[in-house]
Amino acid sequence: MTGIVLHHQKIKQIMVMKKFSSTFLVFFIFTVCVADESPLDRQFPEYSQEHLKEAKDRKVIWKKDGTEMVRIPSRSLNDPVFYMDVCEVTVGQFKEFVKQSSYQYGGNWDNVTKYSPSPKHPMIYVNWNDAVAYAEWAGKRLPKEKEWELAARSGLTGQKFPWGDEDNVARQYANYEGANGKDIWSTSTAPVRSLEKNVYGIYDISGNVWEWCQDWYDQNQHFKVLRGGSWTSYTNGLRIDNRFSNYPTNRNYIYGFRCVVSSNE
Image 1 (cartoon, rainbow, N blue to C red):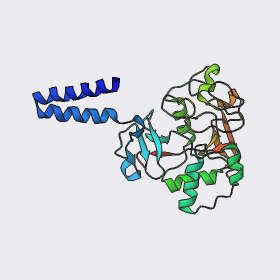
Image 2: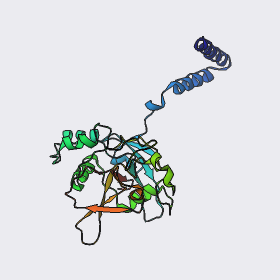
Image 3: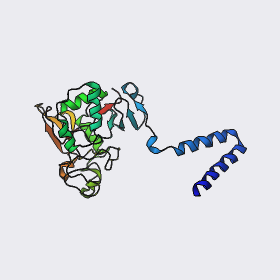
Image 4: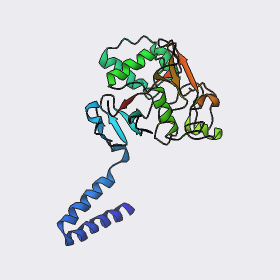
């Protein structure tokens, strides 16, 4: 009955507006159509590299792999604005990359499924070379270490974690060793977007999987940088300033990645 009453109210409003002017009528009908659209149906602007220089949107959908990316503002004239994937690259996205590009992935898919069992889980058992290959196929790149840290800090300085300094809220934001609260995954990665995002709108920037960065770990240039901790890390391993490294050919069940693209490239 309530639905019928509301329906009549809408019709009555339209009729009243019609008495004033046809312009109002068109405006009202347009407003109703927009209000009835589900938020899940709303799409951010879709971009590829040739369009990104003019992009002013805070969030975009990257055309090649369908990933949502968020604009990370620069903190100085020397630091260009860039866009970062809001989520780690998923199993489903990586499989699509392999399918479309015929990339010869050298890992074991059974091992991937053991700890990332669905297409919505982050891709694991990827080495640095695998991550670079995906990024190049998508028209992106791996983040520089300072870009990763800037995005993790959400433009702030000094805090321990992407969400602040409080250890007791870590389970709201990160999948790490054990399980409690919102973090219910004690033996595997969590599907992306399962936990809270940071101020910039980025999910799992700490925990879930270690993320490959573009940089060498040190001047010896033997190891590539990994940042962010993983689902096997303890709380201290989630700290923003925590660094890790491995050979670029090494694959592991706690290694994954996300991509970035500079708006002026």
